[in-house]
Length: 495
Image 1 (cartoon, rainbow, N blue to C red):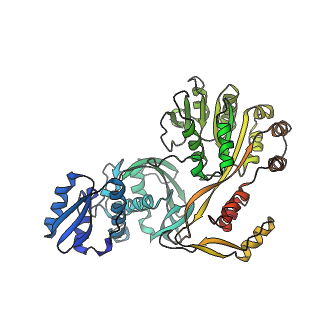
Image 2 (cartoon, rainbow, N blue to C red):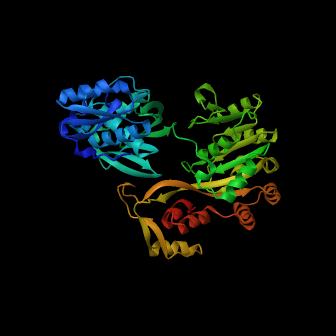
Image 3 (tube, rainbow, N blue to C red):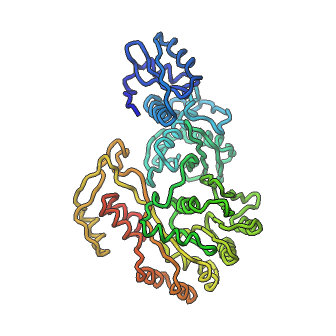
């Protein structure tokens, strides 16, 4: 893609363009004498661009490009040009009550109310930067907007606390929630469009001592499902995982904290299994990606659709493979075990610190040891570590504090590759994430230990004695290859 100096366009051109109603159809990128160069993907935008040129008293030169070129330039231009007209200048402005479901965020205008502009810009910027969550909250008498980028929260805006109620009201309108209710938690959802991407957003509000807080989870349905190699699994582990996923029955359990990529791993496994000869059914909360050839069900507790209830319904639908989004209680765990024992392959997740702990957690839930031993075929523990930014990484000595923690685990590193921070990585030193894993195939020895209700420590020792490495050791191998840092591995594996 050709690089354009978008900052060099005269203010009069930028201002006229930003006020244009259909500006998401085209974008001016340079000025050559009196001629404006405009990019577009549709011939229908040519009269619009001509009208802009007429208003400015200039000529127009248009260039047709594909979507992969157009939308990144459009998003970059809007991020650079949109002036921050913060709501603290006009807290009392009336909210725009137009229908927002499916609205194109690239089309919002200066004519929108200030609060509408503020929220729309926050959404657009977060989505463009690849954030997974947006937090709107009050801290230290300021109203903060924070993005979770590569697993870390970063404050991007600090506003007057007076705008909190109005911003929260706008978010509730978008999420089809009760604007007048601020004493109890609420949940909602809505959809927006950014260029050629459809984005689903889940909204959660919570009353706090300093006022309501809102968190928006961003779900980009246009993203492709990753393959097993793209997750970060080593080739040996991929072959082991693939060998287990072709089992006719049993439970494959993926463990880790919230946001560690468990569902992504299960989707990657399903993407390799999807074919005409299989009936694959999933129950999720929420359905994060649409998988072709898979029957996906959304949890709806108000309508009585729970994880356990959906699985019981699946068993009357002649399934081959069942994916249960999460095991949260005894009922769901028991239903998953029964489904596996009746000849179905069950893929599911559980919130535990590592693979061995998952076994003891299920036993503590009340699952009979002999049933668990008969059904479990593999447990996979995982975390996500941030990857060094390729633009600013260089080799440097390991700090004494980090070195002391690593040496406690009988490891030794004198230097490591580490990012120093640049515009490419938003000064974080990291760009992107990948998984670190530990895989525990259920052997006959492990089955015997389950029946005896062995401790987590004994299960972990058995896993290690069979030659399986831990997540920490997988992380260290990435450090040795210069892909991440010791600080990052210690951050996610200290438990």
